[in-house]
Length: 46
Image 1 (cartoon, rainbow, N blue to C red):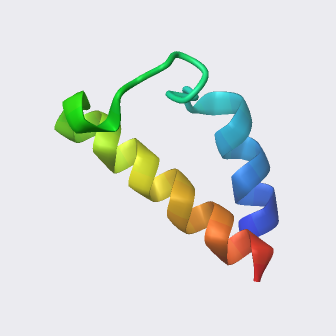
Image 2: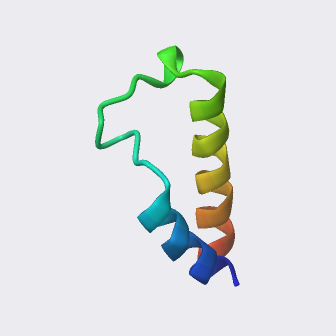
Image 3: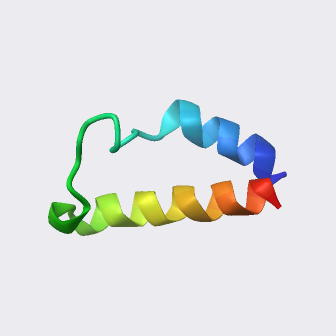
């Protein structure tokens, strides 16, 4: 299930690393998306 969710996230959610976002200057909603994507990716790899 997490592998499918990770693929959907890759398509729908923005990639902040490609945009060159500095994490120390990220807004709360951006940090929430980063955390969510990291959680899903970690679970998909297990």
